[in-house]
Image (tube, rainbow, N blue to C red):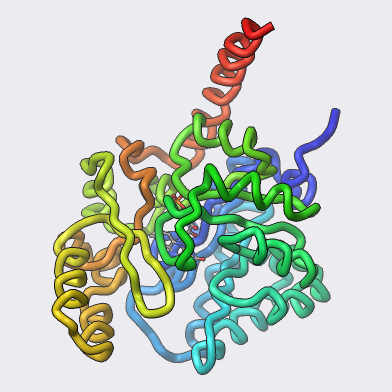
Length: 333
Ligand SMILES: Cc1cc2nc3c(=O)[nH]c(=O)nc-3n(C[C@H](O)[C@H](O)[C@H](O)COP(=O)(O)O)c2cc1C
């Protein structure tokens, strides 16, 4: 029987990857997901209790989180490297040093070019999954030697490029454009999304928002409750200077739009973003007034299960839904 390419590449049972989430995906969530047979990912600021601009401290905190994951599970897991630009790259350089040092199994590289770290990571035996949002970028990532690409559609929570390509349109285009495995995400909240992603040509599934609302996530309970009580039109796309963000609609998204429309300077906008950052929402619990990255799948999230239960129920439901789908197709003759 042909094996799933992502399961073979990463040595995991289910081709489901818990996407990295700043202030949300720490060691407990990462280990719980990996231990359940999928793959967990440590996000930036995992385990932090304050914003710390110190590069060394940021890297050493990540090292401790890696040790913590390893104390909880012996299964493969990933760490996020947000490449960044210019001066900001000092953080990703330090994180890459830690990953190489610690021989972490997998790196999920986002927000930057694939040429920057792929060779260094691969030389250290680390599998590289690179996040992209167009078919052309997928080809560039393949040329740079990454092991698989992650395509992120417009529905996805968090920051991404300015294209508005949805997961439904983007996934088959990326699958056609490259030979290496494709992981897709953005808007996947249950087994129906998983089945659809596989049907669209993906080898693996990438889910952020759904895992944000699990028991092990570091997300503040006020944020989890806000998502559970949200409806189908609860997220908005927020244009920032270099990227788009998808956020849960609240006083933050309203005020930020107002500031932009009234012609606020970029300094004023930056100050507003800093004073109402995801740290305020995810760590301090200000779900009403601070920025909450969240994808369109929010409208599918109605509970706060343990991560392992979520994975088990998706897999069990997937098999039932596939059987029903086969039955439907059979009548076409
Ligand atoms: C709360 C939150 C924080 C995120 N932080 C990061 C991050 O630090 N690095 C990153 O590469 N992507 C980040 N993302 C994007 C996710 O990794 C992923 O692309 C997205 O969640 C997938 O779409 P979904 O939310 O519809 O499942 C974040 C997403 C959310 C919801």
